[in-house]
Image 1 (cartoon, rainbow, N blue to C red):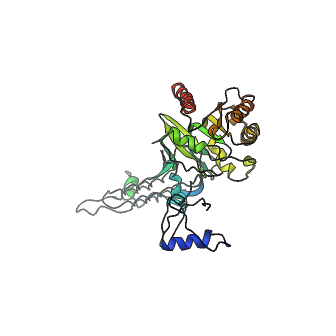
Image 2 (cartoon, rainbow, N blue to C red):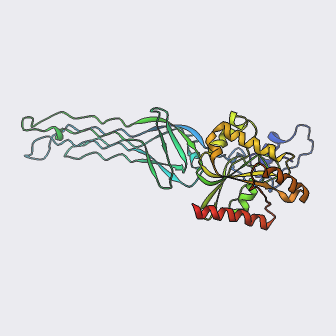
Image 3 (spheres, rainbow, N blue to C red):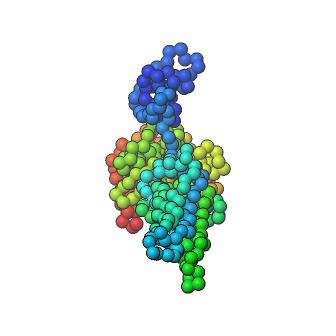
Length: 372
């Protein structure tokens, strides 16, 4: 039976929920999917839940901590006079730090407001308040932080890189700081200043050396698994991949961009969601399935969508591949490859089951790696 985009583990209560929600209405005998069809689950007290998908675009409110207020007190020690009020502590700031986990934005799925700790108030006997703890939020490398309040943008481009999102407020001065030769017993003090508060839109744009693009079911995920240690889901139907997958080929980062369709650049399907991930991909590997009745047409569809979305994408270096060459006869491969060579003379036919063609692709990747 067809498998939905969600993954389930089947048990007594889970089976009932799955059958209730997903079995055909006209089906009298229902057989639960096998563990191969439904490999994973997130369980809840209600029986079953869905594996969360990649979060790559989210709006969040960020608030830095407020500074503590200064104290207006006087010395309590015997035979000591004068002001002794300490200053307030600085409010905590909010920082973004880059990490390699592309699912790090999942922390913002349900919680939409984040704030750093406020500074502590000043106290007597010259004791300043403690500074508020900074809040450090993890972001996938390639995240663009759009400050919707000020209209400015910041980007997290490296692992471990810190970007200031909101600065904590300064602590107020205690009356000890206002003493002068004429004013020996000041009662003046300052309140702490508020921290910065902004509304942000965090948008993930993957940074990869090589991006696999093409129509759905063109063999992109299979090739990523073949070349790297990635474990992308593969199946013989379109839209198997519903979120980008990353793999490492030595020091090269390869991104498997989910299949694009005609009209993606205008918002059809999930195209706009995936097209932005191509913007920061340095080189494109364009996959066309040998099972396609019109490979040249498929190629032009993807190129048009890239052009309509951002003309700069067409300027990226491109390698063209006729994939799944093992699924058609040699004569068909030769005919369809000839059609693609008219569009790109360097087009080659490949198959994950053909070691020679895989070696050709590895040779290309090695060259790219050496030139990096």
